[in-house]
Amino acid sequence: MISSESHDHPATFDSRVIRSLIHDLEFGIQELDHELDEFSPVFDLADLRSFDLVEGLAAGAALQGLYTGLEKTLLVASERLIGKLEKGDKWHEELLLRCKITVGSLPPLLSDSSIEKLRVYKNFRHVFRASYASRVAPERVQDLLRGFKPVWVAVKRDLVGFLEASRELEKKSPIGS
Image (cartoon, rainbow, N blue to C red; front, side):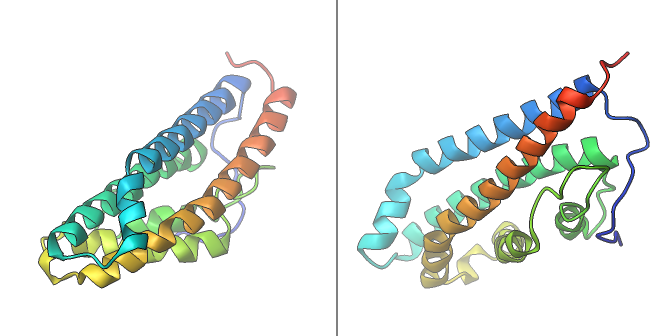
């Protein structure tokens, strides 16, 4: 298990590494914002009336896709910062723990508060993906869907703060060889 202590990256952060990290995070944020826009009819419906089973399953698939996209972004950033993540049984939780780690002078990718909020969606993703989707109550999916945008706002705020610190570090970093 990874601790949330500060870690030194095995390689130095030259400007190319930092620039790649910045690009990957900006792309991931842009993609998730785009996905949220695409799924806006589902979010709108959640505010209008109760979901039936089919609507709940569609919303569950949307939530799973949103969380999985965010997880991909966090995985890429984490692997650039700390190194490859072994994909064992608990890698999804391990990824969230990695997001608390400070590397060099960079802040953690995510705050403890954001990580706690994301655990709810990680657990939902597991249940939904593990073919228990029909066991997920449409009301529960609707509640999770209603809560996702505020969680995304908090996560995005953390990532933007990380990006700002990364841009400052890039200005100070030597050009890579």
